[in-house]
Image 1: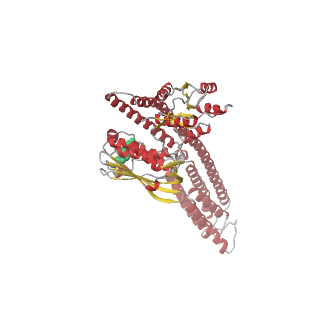
Image 2: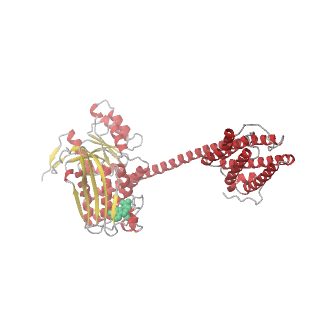
Image 3: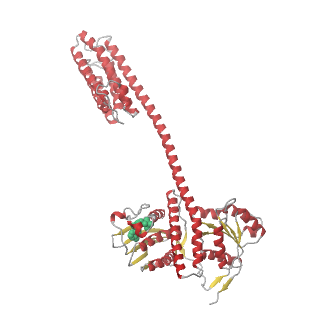
Length: 598
Ligand code: ADP
């Protein structure tokens, strides 16, 4: 705020208007009050000293009148002088106290005590507390000296060199008035400042509330949009995969692969945005289940080998032998996501040579193990400046990256945040043109040897054609997709559109398994599952229910379990996954294991 005052400003109001801070305003008013009262006191004392012929007093009064007038002019000229003028006033007060005590009155009189009190309060109101203590001490010192060494202490005494009555009394009364007004001004300013801060606090709270609501609505919008986008995309992916399994010409096959590749990329991008959104609103937490790291990493690499080989790259996997048949407690989905992202980048940014992943056991104590994960490539590399940026959301090493390689710059930001949940952090070693290494350490709790049942012989297949499947799904495309996938195994499911229809159907007929969408109108998947679990007929109440869901967070997983659902299948439906889960249920329900000849 810039306020220019006239050169000969005499208005306190104008000066105060130029000062926004209420405590500083109070300081200016206090200094102004002290100066005005001092000038009045000088004007009162001047004739008194003159008629009494007190030359020393007269000289002192004229000197002080001069000083106070100059200070007043400076104060009114600009608020920036206020602090220095306050300091000078305190020094003048000290001069008065010391000269009163040892030169003019040579005793402790009421006026001296008043000046000491004014020094103390002005010091605390006008300067900082350290100087205030020093000035207070300097003010009290002459009084203390006189009390200790003075011949006799005459508290209210009019000395020859002291002002004559009634001038002395007027000065004393004006001193009292100065003290009262200074206190009053400071108290008022303090009150105003507290209420201003309270009002500001309220505004701040309101602003924080609105900002939080804006963040929440952004998160909700993103989440809803991503879900809405995923539903049709799931159908595109599902249908493309179905088409890929049926006869087609070479050209059609190429086209379908492109559609599939693009749809999968779009799907991954939407998942990334959803994940990032969840991380931003701290909604992401880790699952803790036994995982065979050896198998997990090999499986991830199996999936990515094709991608690497298509680019003519070698994919090396080195896993510490000590991890064989060893299970650790961790979140396989999130760990897969981390490795998938880093390995995916390594393949993407490498034109020739190899990409490698290595897992080394750094430390293994009784029930915990620390593993170093390292993903190396012989690709384009990243220079030092870029290394500092790439872990930020939506940041790529250079503006040409998107043009040449695609991507959004979210992958590494997600990796970094996910690793934070694992209590770790990702590091990078790289130089341009020389390849890169991304590495991190994670400590896991051990869960004992892998007791998983060995995979069934691939020649053995379950016949699930006779499995009585009830599908509860409101989206016609998803229903069509499920119908087509299930028809591959000669299974004819029954379809219902919402929870109420499903409950009627379960009451009317016998089913072996229910595939239940979570988000449905009228009665959603959770409520429907709960009602089925509460049915009096035990065989109906215990029908296995598999949730159909677009995303599984810990929250969702716990909710699925809490309403008594047995399992879930992610959309877009992976037919192998669906087959495996139906097979498990089939093997429990009927003895349907058959051997496929050949
Ligand atoms: P995206 O891959 O979608 O661009 P990321 O967050 O995964 O986003 O990566 C950010 C940037 O870091 C990339 O755009 C790329 O410039 C750089 N980068 C990541 N991994 C590598 C790698 N292995 N080699 C070279 N550059 C990389």
